[in-house]
Length: 360
Image 1 (cartoon, rainbow, N blue to C red):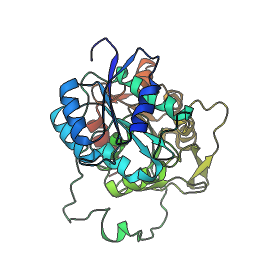
Image 2 (image 1 turned 120 degrees about the vertical axis):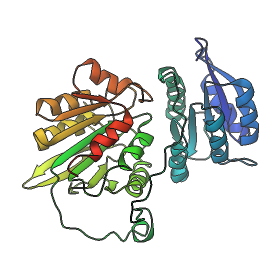
Image 3 (image 1 turned 60 degrees about the vertical axis):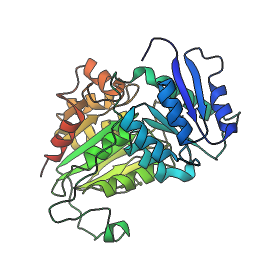
C-alpha cells in the first residue's frame, strides 16, 4: 500500500448507503473514496481500474451479488473487503468470511442512518485498520474440510437437524482457551476443521464479534469439525471434544466445580477493556486448569489476551501465539511476543496441527 491516503471503493446497491458511508470519511484525509459501485459488475470494473486498498461491500445486490463478486475478486486481485451487512444476514456474513473477507460491520437495518454514531465509528475503525495488515493480504478463501475416510461430515444428516446423540460427560484432560479478533473467524474455522473426534481437550473462545453473530458463528464451527461447539451459556459443562464461544456483549469464564469444569457467562465488568474479554477468559482457565491449560492468541488488533496468557504461563500451562507471517493483524499475538510470554510462536497451519495432536 502506498504512503498516501487509504483508497476506498464503496459497493452498495443503495445510493443512500453509498452516500452515508462516504460521509463517514468526510474530514478524514487518511481515507480517499476513489469510487462507488451499485452492483458487483460495476464493482469489478472499478476494482480493476482503481486498485483500491480496501472495499466496503453489501452482499445483496442486483446483476452480480456480493458472493460472485468476492469469488472473482479474490481469484484475480485479492483485496481487503469489509462487509457491511444487516443482522438478518448472519449466515451470509460467515459465508463471505470463508471467501476471504477481512471483517464485517453489522447494521441494525438495511439502511445506514446518518446519526448511527457507533456504526459509523466501526466502519471508520475497520477501514483505518487496513494500515496494520501484513504486506501480503491473505485473500484466499478457507479451504473446505475433507470428509473422513468414512465419509462422515458433521454438517450433514442428523447433525444438521440438531439430532446429536447424547454422550456421557467426560472432563477434558486439557483446556484450550483461544483469543482472536480481526481475521479470527477464518483462522478459527481452519483450526476447528482439523481437530479430531479423538481429542481429549475442551475448547473455549473469546472472539471479538457483535452479539447477534456469535451463536451463528458457533454453529458454523460446530459444522466445520468434530468438536461439539455452541455459544456458551451460564452453567454449561466443558467436557472433552466440546467447545464454547463467548456470547457477544458478554464475558465468559471457566470455573472448577468438583470434577466438572463449568462455563459462567455474565455482563462485562468496568475493568474489562474488551468485550468479550480474552484476558478474563484466559485468566479463569489458568486458575481452573493450571498446567493443563493452553492459551492461544490469534490475529487481532490491540493486546487483549496478553495478561491472560501470562496467567496461563505462570500456572504452568503452554501459550501459543500466531506468527506474523500468517496473522492478518499482528496486534494481539505481537503484543504477547514482545512481552516474551509464548513458548511457541507458530504460523496458523502449524497451530491447527499442534492443537489437533493434543490428546488424540
